[in-house]
Length: 304
Image (tube, rainbow, N blue to C red; front, side, top):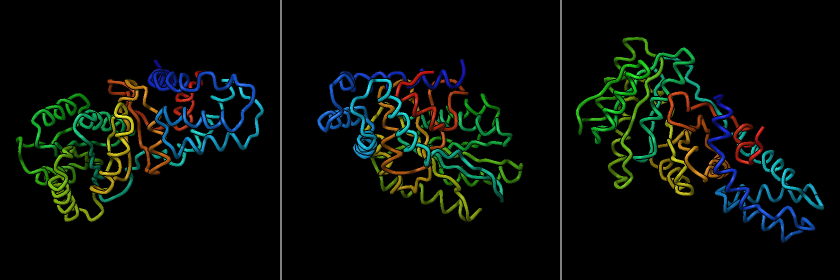
């Protein structure tokens, strides 16, 4: 199955939900203010968020249609969603020296963070970059073991310690070993506990200080992993982690398991943070760079 097939299949629940919410609106005699308001409400109910929904409503109104069939409406939706997504579609750029390029990966427990690190490592390996993983989530033995398994799976070395160990020490060892062995990218897992924000902030600050001593430009990226199935809660996570950890970009996972993929549009419109990649499956190849046109068409239900 091609990536495009997996993408459209992954967004099918989202597209079906959007279609259900818009059902009957295009059969009305006139595309008047009342109908436009109902379309806007349908978009909000589909998790596209109030900002993006109003933008799309205004774009439809500006075209001065007397009437619009379902295909026509889906086409406009795809075009307007693509306009929202295009500015934030930015692949991870890991070119630059001195090596290694350090990527801190953050996110709440259960978001698919550790799995995403493995897939992200594989994606970078496909571009001929050498990758090393660091198990900086030392509060969960399962996270350490999971990262080791992913390291074996993609053939990447993993720096780890014991449960409850010092995350900053793991990161220090990772940078030292990556530098000594000429590794291009060091991807660091981090703890995902939002219950105690102060503790999390202190830990991330310590990691940053250690990195800064070794390379003043590190971390080069702070990537937040979001679980699309949480819907609007993902927007709250962006806000919290942006303020706590200085998020520089997003990866959204589990889009194949939810009808709430519209939150991707809401996140792009509200925060404007780069979206580096999206995940639509469990396989090692199911995390791919973010393609705004393909995603916009998949959300709108415009299947080829």
